[in-house]
Image (cartoon, rainbow, N blue to C red; front, side, top):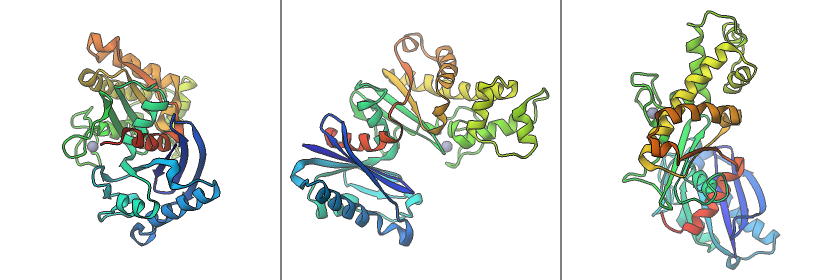
Length: 319
Ligand code: ZN
């Protein structure tokens, strides 16, 4: 039997057919058509599934189920999505009902950060452990918590909102309305914001400060690249970033004591340097028994975390 995983994003929809052990057999993608309030998105997905099943000579009976990760607020029991603004979905979308009606394959859905967490837990850095927390550092900061083998949704589906852990009371204003959330300093834009702000107070010689003062484009990658080259100001900026992320990780670990906190997303491309930096503060702040049992790791699946985690929803079959 096969599993199908779908990673629904604002620009592309990624699909994969996997064996039951999580091995990817086929992968493809289509563009996400977000015009007309995103009304073509689900019909296009259904058409693509049916087209590919034909192409590969597969039938609905070859599938245990289809899983999907979606942006927005997902009701995993009803299989609906609302408030996915990058898809132009502001009203309730009965995704499960539509897809099951036209594919005859059981369908499961959860939010994209939870799904990526499941992917890393199953086939990535989580190595199948029952307690894994995933943090993704991208345009925003997302998270997913698997505790005692189950995804944590919380009472209103807001469990695992790691990006909104406050790491600096009275810090920068966040999109959520609060101040000093992890997302304001550890997302791709957050790192740049830290750099710009700190550059005003740095008086030494620094190429990164020169780039900022000169009005050149500076991204999170620029900041980490300069730090790798030993730029003294860039090292100050990334140290502040490590402090915030290490503080958040220690608080998460003190509550959950997971086997691993897995860090993924674009900003995590900084790699081992980032891991070492975060670990330093994690060791400083975490409870002694937590410090020696919870590991901080880098994500391993990259772009595939979404489709693999989505397929994993079929295995879990509950939300
Ligand atoms: Zn926030």
